[in-house]
Image (cartoon, rainbow, N blue to C red; front, side, top):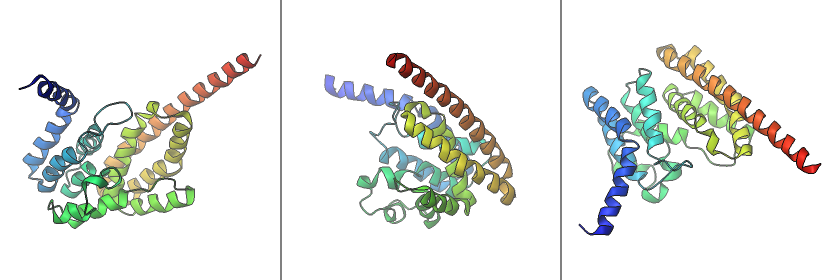
Length: 232
């Protein structure tokens, strides 16, 4: 093996080490429960998100793995839900690797129509105003499986808000309080079969959002104080 190939292999191993525990946890769970679609989605998510990174530099795959493993830890073992959790961002972020769009997931990779419909329901266009966001989140709220995925997704993203700019952080906190926390409350009430998972997600998201809001207020106060001092 040449030095260049060895270097690339070492870098690949470093990337994999950042998510391998979650990957193997989900794989073992899926095999043990005979979740065919989750097994397909796990391999496919790794392939489609290869080379992509989050703002903190971690492999992007670590995010859908976290979303899926969180749902498993909350007692969710539905095959379509876990498969869609692993692939919930692919229509937004991997369109260049899916030339046939979402239909590739069904026609090429053998996933069910239900998995595709969950992913489509979760896919969001950028730049939506409050009215459009209300329609988007209401559409998710109507489907408990999609709501589980979205809330788990929001919980993980909220834990990494420190990578956002302050305006984006403020927007995200506001959106969470306006749409996600009420969604969790609604789902806890109207989907009793998932009440425990929705209850945990609501408490965790609400607590995380409050903590981030307090932190942001302190940052904004400090910034304003420094600006006044500089102005003097």
